[in-house]
Image (cartoon, rainbow, N blue to C red; front, side, top):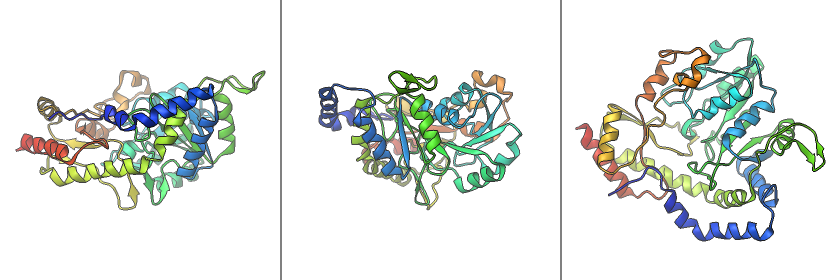
Length: 365
């Protein structure tokens, strides 16, 4: 048995006819940029999430960057965020000229909201929670702190499409939120894509201009912008896939239940979900003792896994100028030595999950 971490090939085979129909439809219309397909996608996201506005962009990274930029965050400002995420989270902060400031994480791998106030300085402009693996941060507490200190909340919801917290969709708590539609996400395009949602008309209007070179019309450039437009083909595919998102998340939830059923060892911990949360289950990440040897053992048994991520953001070479060192965030560093993503996608069968669990149980005996 050979079990892949994520199987995009199976998804394409399942959707091949529909994807080719999307391609044919877009090519027949003969326009590929900022067409009705993009508008339809943006409207569909608004309906799904309950937001007033959505703008399709060319990546989740650009979505974070534009969320920051549109709210005036730049040189000399500080943004409080998590030390565990993909590098794009803080790369976007750096690229607008601001400085990422970290607080340590909790056992659920989201940053510890109880530490936020101690990190606030006169330069702090925003708090950027990262909903890691689709698990929503404690937004009530974060919003309360932000209001107390007059800070903007920008949600990094790259992994939270389809996640809910007390009935409210992830990304609906802050002023503006950034999502990714990278191929590894639950709602995924054929390549890099992303989008923002917001209820703030000013942020929406700024980003709408900025993503298209600052053009109000072909001959009227209002600001200097960039090219970050979601193309029509990916917009059409995302609209189609959005209709299937709830069923995809349900199948992924079943995976987690099978893992919980068949894993029979106390050497692995699965971060918990609260009863009032609905996780999007974009990845299945465990905390494993003797992680590196376990991964080798799984690989020898044709089971793919991934260390996701093995190094907290403050310990990367690129982060040296931020002034942190090893030991600055002990919980994040400890968890990064244990995290392991196990096979998890909507085409995974129960017998395959049982096989993975049997091998893990065998390793720890």
